[in-house]
Image 1: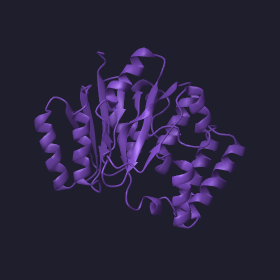
Image 2: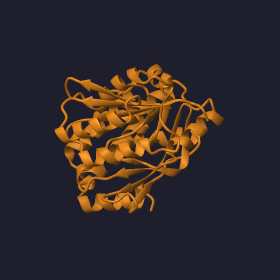
Image 3: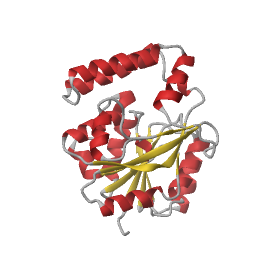
Amino acid sequence: MNKRISVLISLYEKNDPEYFEQAMISIFEQTYQPTEVILVIDGDKTQEQQNIIDYFQLKYVNILKVIQLDKNNGQGAALNEGLKYCSYELVARMDTDDISKKTRFEKQVSIFEQNPEIDVVGSWVDEFFDLPNEKISIRKVPEKHFEIAKFAKYRCPFNHPAVMYKKSKIIECGGYEQAGLLDDYILWMKMLKIGAIFYNIQESLLCYRLGNDMYKRRGGIKYAIDECNSQLFLFRSGLISLPITLVNIFVRFFVRIVPEKIRVLIYKNVLRKR
């Protein structure tokens, strides 16, 4: 394999420095090394975060490129800006609190080399709270394109921090929308509309950190309204039909407003695999 790849990651001041360092280590300890890492600083940063950035810039002087934004505009805007600085067609996404498994990039690049028609390659993720080797669940997503397209009508078909995609296709569909909770979901729907081809590797290639208040954060009237607005955006954009929009709004609103104990059961027994 001889393809060069960029890694795209954004950071803002509320990101935990320890988790950020672990994420960066996992990027540079891959069996298939990235050619460059584009780190977008989305507004202010803490001194602890700056110390970590300084360490990696010194150690990987020709690989790590830091882009500083004047103010916090949200992840979608930060990633759109970061894409401008990605030098290579294949771009691996990464978040500041997750950990990529060592063979992640190698396996994803291999899929692109064997299937040049594919535009996005994702994978399952292991979800955990404190220690990455103590997973509590696996978020599984469909493998083949037709399965992914069908799944996408109702739920996000990729684990965003675990994807690798072709930069040209992201640009072609207009990049990330400023859509808050579902900016990545909307991106995949836009890509489907322009004919992008999807694939998910059927194993976990990333450890996805869940905050201890994850189930609480994914509930409440504000979260429910934000999700409903995102579904309406998909409908107005012609990305989903009215019947699917209504079903999605009903189901999502219900999940967000039920008591937290019930929401936990829904996540553990319906939305996730163990």
